[in-house]
Length: 159
Image: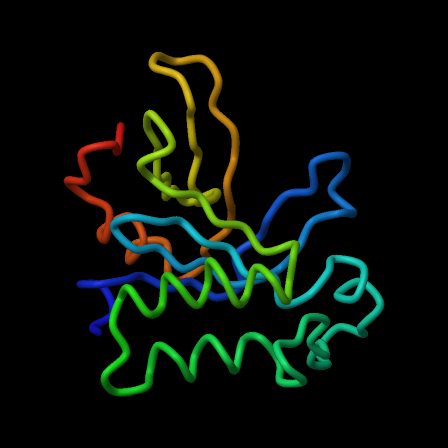
């Protein structure tokens, strides 16, 4: 499995809370040609409690190990297939960490990847047209060009 060919990964992505920004989660965005995933690493509350300049302790764990380490170990393991990665994220991570998100691209009408000087993210839409867009994740930081480039030419991507 090769990054930017089979999948794209962005650390420090953010999932905006449905009710308020204080419910936002920091985590990892993983994209494949079939799925959009978000796996939380920290809550916004835990990040706020940490003093600036100090590392933030992980909030979410998978079988006792920080989930970010588990994800990075899996994608870096030789011989892991895209199907194995997708199954692991859809079944095992979702079961252990219910706040993780999985969006099958076949289940949506269209999506946008935006990458500008002021922000980045993925918007999804379950209807055709200009109405009904909602954020999936935001803030890719340094990985925003990789995410946008990975999905360039995807049949459901709109500009």
